[in-house]
Length: 295
Length: 268
Image (cartoon, rainbow over all chains, first blue to last red; front, side, top):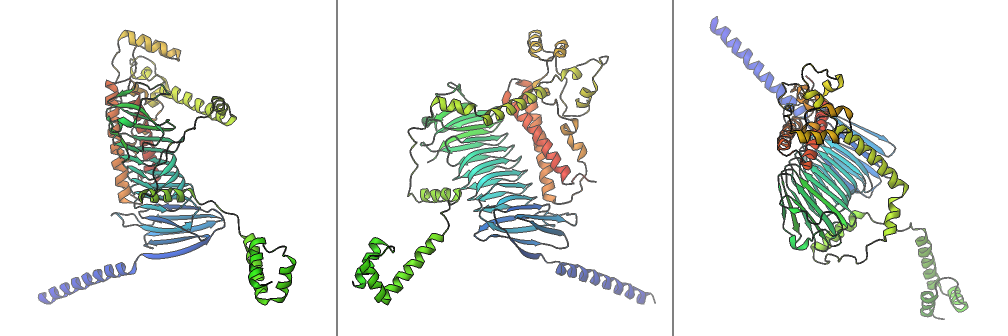
């Protein structure tokens, strides 16, 4: 009798184990990422507001059509996506239905196709925010995700906690604030920039528009600007405990129209290129400020 | 008139009005009638086209970058005459909008100055018997908190005199000690902002594990920066740039804590 009982127990255990495996497999098969596409007809210059409270990537591209197309990919059991249109404003929100315990467990990815003239307000936790060929004011926020902008123009506000910004061929005005993220502004023609970070590195390698104001501050990171000898700018560089590495001394002359004539020490520098029409303010608490001439 | 001559007339003089000879040829020749009808449709359609629209600014930036990259264009030379007349510059200053902006800016700067330069020594260096104002007590960090500003050491007498004279608050004249500039930054910042970690003990997460880790890591970095700036300012109290960065770090910390609280990450 006893061996018979042992066999029964083993059988029961096997059955339970198999059932658990089947359940796990079934749940895995039953929850594939859901792919949704929705079209919203718009008349004028739309505003798209996307609040992604969970992880995920947001990609925005433009088209000639007068409509906003929202393509979302998410797990329907873990993420709720709400879309609403009020006139020319499209509100999109993604919220988590479960508490995540692992990175990217609760995730919603978006691809938006918008008219060229569109205003954007995008927010995500992690994952890249990528915007290309959109003309309009935009406010982009991310906690740990990077922000990549290409050929955009308007008043651009980027806020991250740890994510970095790369802005290529941008025009208009740019505000960037981060703690751990850096910023690279390349081949751009911005009339005003304000880049602030705590530990990230900052690089500006673009055009200095006359009467433009360019402010770059990094507490611990490096700040680097590259200019062309034909540019017209005043450079004011200051660091508390870091250094100012001026590698373009032959192109910068002492200021002739301000109160800074003789200020040029190891961690402080003022110089002018051309007529000094643009104003460039660089500062760092303990990082290195580097001033270079574009090759 | 031949068809060739009719086309020449159209080319030179347009559709309207046609010369008499051309009109008589048009009445007889079906090929020229077709041509005339086609041209009339094209012209009327062209008139209905919308006015030319300026391409977006980024298009020029992109084109210029591409052409510069291919070596087709070079950097432009600086314009020789950019200087505006001095009276034009002066008139710009006195525009109502500029004046209003400057007024608001001055008011804000004055408010910020008052906030930053309020005397913190009243509480910090008071003897136990000295009565303490309730509002100031609320601002003072507790003695057990590790990052709270240390009591300020007595400053040399000449410095005290100069400092007291510079105070706009008459009550400050009774103080014996000069505050550290880094301590000044604490003024006006609620204690919950100075030590927000106390409110963020909960490890629970409702959103993103990665984002939560990033927020906490950056909060740690900000705390390090604050400690570093404070230490530096103890040695170099006149470093205005360091003070600016310290104030900025406090602001970032407040925003970070607000972000953490807003996202519900502090919930137990």
